[in-house]
Image (spheres, rainbow, N blue to C red):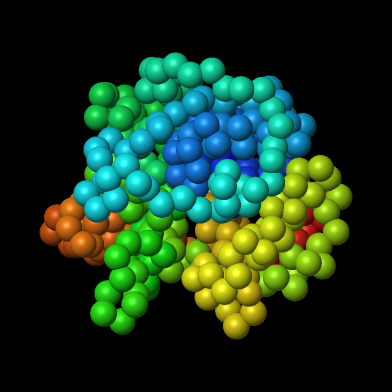
Amino acid sequence: MSGNPVVYDCDPGPDDAVNIFLASGLPQFRNANVVTSFGCGSVTDSSQNAVGFLDALKYPDIPVIHGASEPMQRHPLRGEDLPRFFGSNGFNDISLSGAAVPEGDPTKRLHDLLRAGNVEYFLTGPCTNLAKLILQDPEYAKSQISRLYIMGGALRGTGNEGPKDSEGKQWAEFNFYLDAISANVVLSSGIPISLVTWDTAQKFAVPKSTIDSLTPKSEAASVLVDTMKAFFSIYKNDKHQEATAEPSFILSDAITHMDSLQVGLTSREPVSVRVIEGGQDVGRLVEDSEGGHTVDYVTLREPERAISYLVEQLER
């Protein structure tokens, strides 16, 4: 991550909050902005969680924009009955207090937010907010965003959402599944993209024993440890704990931060991809050398080092 302006477009979500927490120790975090979206909960939940976590982080002045409340089009399989995750409020039922976020035109506010240029953009929820801006002014978005870090899709392994096949496997990933059309708009934007997929994310699985042994030193770190511990009570034997023999919490969004640091924790490989927008495979990310969009596929090179880095930051 450079000293550029930073945008976090997210649906907090403990994994989004960990991503923000890790970035908060960098000087450029003072230039951060948060845009919320539906996803793990409603957009109202996301905004409440964002404001509350920023308060715990001692950054109450970081602006929060109340973003998209639904996908660009009605979901072809789920209609308006979209899946949710992480408890009743998207934060494993851990309540975060903070001022309400005023509603407005999120596309206009996002347009204004990018005016400074050379923006690093972290997109760890559905792609709806940015897709609307790209459709409105594609050249502006491309010229103002220096790099886009996305968590979405499952490219070289199974996913965590969508219909199950005959073997009981799912092939879509939560963020892209919620708004596949927006995902394709963003992937085809021409903005340089680092793409963290669910198959990569499963390598960053923090064991329950590690989480239980943490001794957080700050209010924000304590909030994160509490919500991760709550996860294991809410989702016993859940599919999101499959990555290791021991129950674990997969912190997919935080890999975008690690990739932005460019300190050897991740590597990038150019691939051409697209998202299936309809049918039973809606939301599935596939490689397509002819009709796809070129992105940098991110892999996590040193999972144990990444976990050690997380622990160090939570206990500092």
